[in-house]
Every structure is written in structure tokens, then in C-alpha cells.
Image: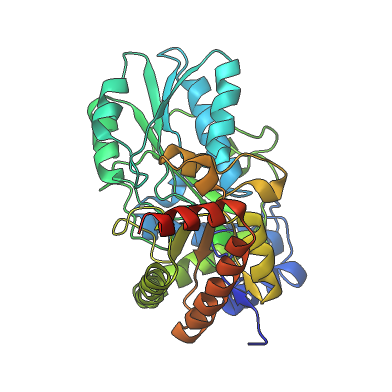
Length: 396
């Protein structure tokens, strides 16, 4: 095909040209420090306020409830650690799910070492949390519930409104990691009873190194970075003005294009899923079929190693990722796939493809043809597949 087909938009997205254009003057022309009092620099303070207002408007929030960070991981760390410390006198029990991003799971592990207790909710085979288990897990000393809006691997969208309502009824803070969801699904923090929300610019065609944390007014939360008076004294450090301009422009673009963009992504997503399921045997779609991010396709292929699959796809100009963590040096498959009940040998053969609105059906056709060939080649080299076929034939 001769060109790159990028199917790893859950990892990062291409910064939109209009976003880059909006950012450029703040590197070379409007480079003043917003904390300075002279007009040249102070003008950037107004620019930052404008970006805050754009994001707040999309979420149905107030501008003073938006705090800029370096990205989703920082926002998640801040929400959990600072809230846990602020409400420690009330209790030290936190509830989350087993399929959270490691920015949440590792932060919970850190808090456990500090004396906090964490309940990790199970999920069903589609990746959805059990609301009854959530209710049963709430204790007198529960201070925080953190459940991701949509899963970064399998794309399952959680019942955030119901979770938020349960938290509100019990007087418990509710945080959601919306890094994959912001810009992809409509979010209103009041309607969904969200107290804190994390997002990251590079997931919706903005720059890397910039994110935000929504903190509902009245939530008691401690400062995360100590120093100057930036971000209303809650996150010190000179503001990343180009990044803030970029995430503001990207958020505005994401909201403006969302309906048309999601329509395109869903059409190609469903087309890709149909072709794979009908043309490649012994595969399994991971995640909920309906409650699913519009651009997420995640399959497990039996008798195939995910790492080998990725390497072969890369040789054909296709960028994707695996549900297996083998590419990071770990022999263990994805914690998400294990949590939804996949055995190790099947979880190891998983492939995540996350689309953008630029991916066409013609490119999807190319991906399926390449995938069919690679999967069959890899299976032909597998003694497990050979034994399986022999047993299948013997049973006929």
C-alpha cells in the first residue's frame, strides 16, 4: 500500500494542524511568563483563562474548576493522593476497579503502603463493573471512588452516571479517569455527578505534556506541586502557555467535530469488526459491543503471540498495539484481559486497533487482508494450533 496506516490512537494522536498553528505564536512572539505584572506577559494570563473557559464549557463546569497539569498520569496521581490526604480524618478506604490504567492502580498501591485500604472491583466479561458489588463495598470510612470512564485497552464505557449517583448518595467523592473518553463521548460533570475528572491533550489531537484535572468547587484537596501561586495555589510552576493554548484549541476542535468524527469512526470500526469475525476463525472481540468507544477494536486470536503479530503488522506499514504487555519486557499478559476472564494463552494473542476519522474502509480492507495472512502464518508455526486442528479433524 506504500503508506503508514496508524491504528494506535489510544496511545497518542496526531496533533491537528490548527492546534499547532494556534500554539506557535506562544513559543516565539507571546512568550511572556503569565505571572509577571507587565502587560506583555500578563496578556497570557487572559489567554489561559480563555482556554480554561473553553474546557469548562464542554464539561458543563466552571472555569475555576479546571486545573492544568502535565497530563493524565499527573492528574490521576493528584486526584487520588491529594484527596486521600485531605479526607484521611474521615477514613482511609478507596474503591476502584481491576481494569484501571496503571496511573490509578500504581497510585493505589502507593496509598496502600501509606496505610490506606483499597477495594478493587471485579468486572464482567465485557469489562463492566458490577454496581451491586460497588454498593456492597462501600463502608463508613470510604472516602473516594475512582472508576475510569472508558477503558484504554478494550474500549468499554462504564455506567458513569450510575456510579456517580451511588457516590453522591453516600457522600463519597467520585473521580473518573476520562483520558480515553474526553473528546470521544459527551460528558457533563453535573449530570454524571463527577467530582474530579482527568484528561490528557495528546489523546484528542492536542500536544503531549499537557492535561487537566477538573475539581468540583467545594472538594477539599491538597496542593500537588508546592512553590508559586499558579493554578490558584494548588499546582505551582510556570504555566505551559503553548501547551495550554494547544489543549484549549484541541478541546474546542474535538467538541466541534465530535458528532461527524464519531460517525466516521464507528462506521469503520463496525466494518472492521464484522470482517475480522467473519473471515478469521478462532478470534474473540474483547470489550462490550455496544457500550464501546467509537474508535476501539480489540481482538484476541488463539494460537498467536501478540508481539509477533505487531512486528509483522509493522513490516506491512500498520501501527497497532497488543493487549499483551510483552513488548514492555513483561511475560504477563494485560491485567485488563485477565480481569475479563481470558486465560493467559488467549490474552497473549491480543491486538488493539484504535482508529481516527482519517481511516477509510479501503484501509480497513487492507488491514484485514494483511491480518488474515499474518495470523494464518503464525498459526502454521504453532504446535498448539497443529494439535488443535488434528483434534478438530478427528472429531468430525
